[in-house]
Amino acid sequence: MPFPSTPKRLLGAALAAVMLAQPALAQDDAAGDETLIATINGEPYTLDLFRTFYAQRLQQAGGENTPDLQERAFNEFMNLVVAAQDAEQRKLAERTNVQTALELQRMLVLSQAALQSIAAETEVTDDELKQAYEQFKEQAKRTEYKARHILVDDQDKAKDIAKQVGKKKARNFEKLAEEHSLGPTADKGGDLGWFDARQMVKPFADAVAQLKPGEWTEQPVQTQFGWHVILLEETRDAEPPSFEDAKPNLEAAVKRQKVATKLAEMRNGAMVDLNEDVVKVEEPSE
Image 1 (spheres, rainbow, N blue to C red):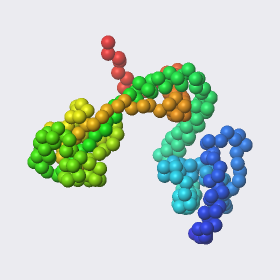
Image 2: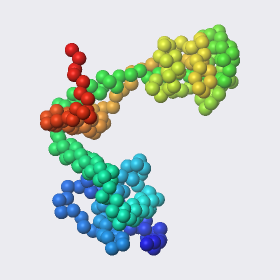
Image 3: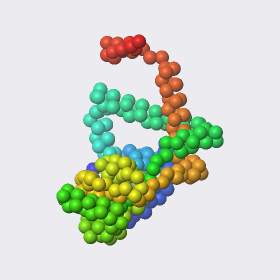
Image 4: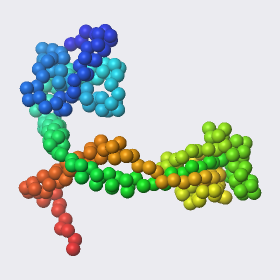
């Protein structure tokens, strides 16, 4: 049965109101919300059902809630409904493979709900946060570089420029970059500003890491962009975010770790009787 078309402005306004509420799994509402979003072929469909469907689409879209996404999601929901109704009429739910898939989806939803519940019950202490911050600072230690480069598309030209840099001990580097370098940094004398080695392609990053301030690459470095002559000007230790700035991410990370530990405890405590005709268990090597 075809559905009557809905004007986009009315649809957008209606869906905007729907999106104000949180997805069903994010709520702790034992009574539930029986508000309907639609009755389709005589079957009622709740607003909570659509919210949960939309939450998945919103996550897939990177979290950007837009009228276009709302409209697409609503149309997909309508397609989902009529296809599911057709499957019911065909009695496809009686098929073994469909029953198995439905059971898997049930397990996935229940496990997600369980992990969310465990996370909500998990507390993170100040001492745990401070310990996590100290570990974070240690892992975040890195060197930042301030450098210039001259980029050309020919190896021989790059070698010639490197020789010219060497003759003037790099005092002519900015001028040579303005005259010869390709790309947007040429107008700035090849200035790359401060950067983390992870921001650069590996051959470039490796070459910079071998230089001392004031040194340059006497042998040009090749990347997919061309040939580089690199001058390292300064280095510094990167400053990690403050404890207060890092606290939300640290709290989430500690909580994830504690939930993972709890899950491992649950698994290790489970009574498991494997069918060894299907699952081959290897004895641990001594």
